[in-house]
Image (tube, rainbow, N blue to C red):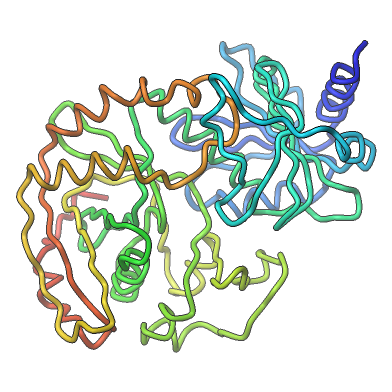
Length: 393
């Protein structure tokens, strides 16, 4: 048995020996988690219960005879597995895998220490230490961490999100880097490059009663009727101190004393220049149910933020221009890195081409909103873009 096979068997043995089993279902797609940690169910409840269904079950009830079986994510502690991959030679993605990213998020590098269709191992050094192991044939992802370290909750969410995004891709959905919300019963997607004001404008909407599908991305598709539809994949919400200072509601409601570390279940964490919230934290902050999981999209908003703007300006955008900008954003502005070699990731552009073509024929209503700090907003003009629809629930 070669070294890779030995370590692969050790990983499988650890994953299959977990004592705690939880199934989380989102948009009809079940995902089975296993761990030796007694608080696994609490962590998954915290992360996903507002947008998915979380059920703790005995292992035998999670076993499924359906084809294909649900994907599994194992969260385990093991110094032996961690150190077994510590000094391995790095592997550079090449060939069909050349497009894979060597970072977890753009500011957090990660490295491949094994990379093949049978076994992929990614080593992370910051903001957490651990391994991500992908076993495609077993439909298994494993998050391995040293025994002295607690689970890094954002990574658990990231792995789950990767699986659910892929499930939605198979149904014709596409990633869209945007803030997505529902206001007065109408769905809106706020699209723009970094620093355009997407999160800032979304927080102004939430302060005035909107619901949030996603602060940074969501999945979109075109219906047979030519309408745009969006679904949520739960992800962390990151807000800059400047956004909080410029939002009267947030400034008054949020305790902005810095809380470094990874205790996300205790409240917002300040990490790498931003305050980070999971879904329950946003509900607590706004003192109401904020998070939603799906919506029809009635309006595209392209924000343009500048501190020099003293009075907002709303400009209609024609449908052809809006479609072109939407397709360009999906094709060129990826919200998340592709860093695991799932088969449908490796041929992603070919799979997306007909979907992008269909989006190019969507019925869209769009505006550009130029704005500055909160006093520049004339909210009655923004509210006039939305009309109540009691049936869109």
